[in-house]
Structures are given as C-alpha cells and as structure tokens.
Amino acid sequence: MAYDVAFKDVPAQLVLAARERVTLTTVAERLGAAFGEIMACGQAAGATYAGPPFVLYPERFDESTEGEIVVCMPVAPGAAGAGRVSLEEIPGGRVASTMHVGPYHDISPAYEALMAAMTAEGLHPGGPPREIYLNDPGTVPEHALLTEIDWPVQ
Image (tube, rainbow, N blue to C red; front, side, top):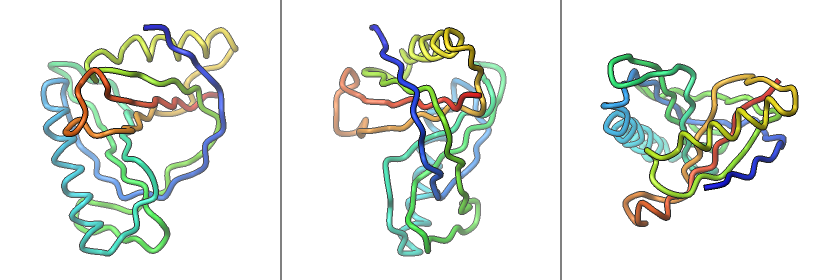
C-alpha cells in the first residue's frame, strides 16, 4: 500500500487518559481495558466526547520488552478524571500525517512512510506518534479499519 503523507497543524486536545505498560503480546488486551475504564469514568462524570479515540506511543516495545502507551479519549472542557483516568491536555503542533487502511498489525509501513517523508523534509520526530482510530473494529471488517497516524515533527 502506498501512503500519502501530509504535514499539517493540529490543535491541542483535552483528553481523559489512562497510561499502560504493554508488550506487543498484551497491547490489544490492555488497550481495550483502558478504553473501557476511560469510557466508564467519562460516563460517570457526564463527559462530552469531542473526537475519535487515539493512543500515544511514547516508548517502543516488542514481544519481550514493555513500553508505555497513553490511551486517550478527547473530551470537552468540564470533564474530570477519577482513579487511574486523568484529565490531560495533549499538545498540538505540526505533524506528519498519513492514513492506514487495514489491520492494525500491518501498520509498520505507514510509520516507515512518515519517517521517510520527515527525512526528505529535513525534519525529525518531535514527540510520540498518535494513532487515531476512526472506526470501530467491532463493527467493520479488519480490511476496512481506518487509522490516522499523526507524528509530531521538529
């Protein structure tokens, strides 16, 4: 699959967030559990959701090495965190962006395209990439999953 990469500015986002330590083997399960916690917290607090869910990937991980992920649900002002779920503002700024269509486990070439585009522009990663999940894996077939990847640049 060929990836079109664009550079754009994204606004800061207020989110309900949960941090998890994961490996490649545990990421799907822990990500799902964290989204469940966030949604329960938001519902209990009467939060208004303000965009699609996303995950920040500040650390690398593989099958045997753990790394941190930050599971986020954009909310309108007035939301409140509770327990493990915190209210945070994710910074905005310039990003390299592309769209991945298909299974999550086939997303690596999208990251390679983003890195190649950054290098071609003389740019470097300026923060953790964010995967924005534009549809629900519970309601669409795996080949139709849409994931926007925004990677801050500097």
